[in-house]
Amino acid sequence: MASPTFPEDLLQAQREWNRTYEALAASCPGTTVLRRRLLRLSDVIAHHPFLAGGPGRSSALRCELRRAARETAATDASVGRGGRAS
Image 1 (cartoon, one colour):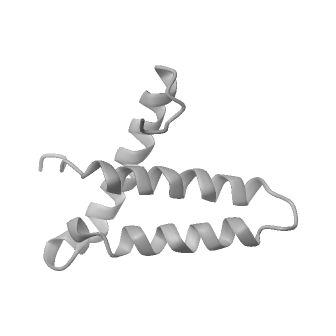
Image 2 (spheres, helix red, strand yellow):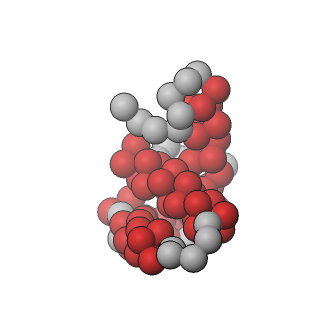
């Protein structure tokens, strides 16, 4: 099966989710802002039209989204973009 081409806004939301999760895992007390951001991003990802209904909501597709987001974040960082879309 070929890897799907995810919309850039969905990839960006997943990259932001990953960064927020990492920041939350490494943070000290006072994590309310990070927890709220993680919840908001989770909602954005879960309700994105690309993932709506049918086979798009499969666990395999969500795993592929997380992999693609990590891969593009690493690629962006290696070329000096810091994993953020311009």
